[in-house]
Length: 198
Image (cartoon, rainbow, N blue to C red):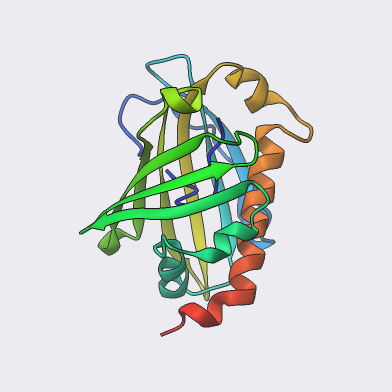
């Protein structure tokens, strides 16, 4: 189902529908550290997606070091993550396994490709059928934003009940899940960025 923080994992390809135009209030939301969420539709299938944008109070190199620490015990402070482990890392290709609280006893096996020069992480779920999904993939793009970092995460996925989850406005829905995840990460890096400073 939903993806979480580990590589809070995420590949944009051609053939997706265009994203909605965002008003001038978007920059104000980002500057106030409020997550901005856009719903996306997959252009070639029945699945759904999202674009999540938020700002963290840490320089780009510091936040990149945090995001590429795939053997990070701090991930266990996220209430949606029961367990997380680094399986392998060969060059820029990383395999991790994560168990989420909303799918206990299901191990999500993620493959993440790291592009250091672009501060980009592309990810895909390697065992979607075993996790009750048809597919799940996306990317995380980091960009310098003054003294902080702007995070853009795009994800596409399909599973039974996907439309209900994407549109459900209360606890348990996509919007609540993404806002929690972004705010958790904002708080986490504020508290622990000293660990990643060179």
